[in-house]
Length: 252
Image 1: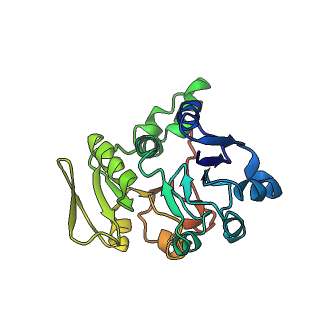
Image 2: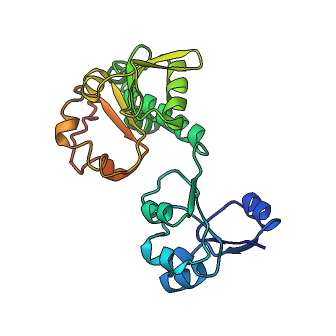
Image 3: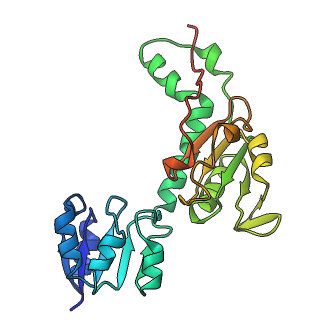
């Protein structure tokens, strides 16, 4: 029977399903015990990880039986993909598994930010009523939402944001053409600078690669509209650290 090492949390339903077919070693804290992780990896046919387990060359060299690496997520920066490719080890990310959840988070975050709810809610809870201030906050309807990276999650964002009345545009260097059709929607494809100039909200859906690390530098952020919002549900390293002024002060 093929053996699988699971080094981080997995749902009980998935664990029970795998256990019916394979010899499963479930040690959800083993990613933090490197010596144990290396020893266990040398004895299994497959390993399932999230983002904390470093499936690097050291581990892969020891894992002589390894045939498959499963990733419970879509980011693959913790896996040595070149080594896997050169040694016939297949890597399977859970593409699309959390697309709906992330898309809901992005659209709800965009609305919350545009409407000023982060500040308005506790003020109201404290008995204040700054109606004159927050009645001026922006509606989503008719505003432009820029989607950077139009993969499975970016496409779900486009569908949900369009239902709110956002006008969606996208930038994706891997897609050729001037637009993309998603169900009944047509999403214009723009250059990154033009997208940033036009968008009231920009949302990032990119993998962490050498080409995307630090892509959103201070210079890039300066291309955005005054008062625009950036929602990053991809990797933090895509946005370079910079202290941004956020003006949510309310006179009451």
